[in-house]
Image 1 (cartoon, rainbow, N blue to C red):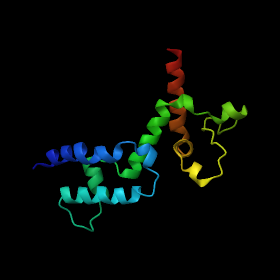
Image 2 (image 1 turned 90 degrees about the vertical axis):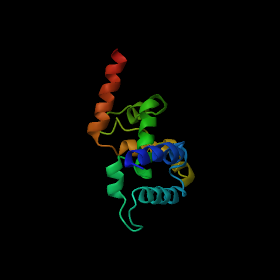
Image 3 (image 1 turned 135 degrees about the horizontal axis):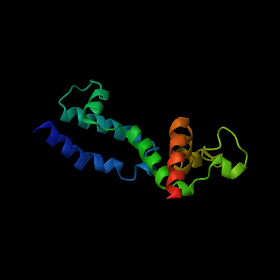
Length: 145
């Protein structure tokens, strides 16, 4: 088969399974073994060796590794559901350089800190300020329309 057909088969049968609900299970202990299976499948499709690096194969096929796909899905969830998150300015009402960051709930249990809302907020807060400022600007423009 051609590589384009194999890529299509990968996205229809393999990629769709782990990407379903990845925001909820992507931080679990099983994600490492699922990533190993993802790499093994790509190596089989590309007929590369067992110990060859997959980073070039991911780039060549324009496929996100499992961790990158998890982070991308979390950020997409924040953008589409921004009204469910509070910014630091909304909570503290003090202008600081971090007032556009999302407010992190004060949860001390590790189980709660591995939850979706906490992890999403931390990842969003680690984005460069250029990206978050651009996002805020786009939201303000859309509100004016």
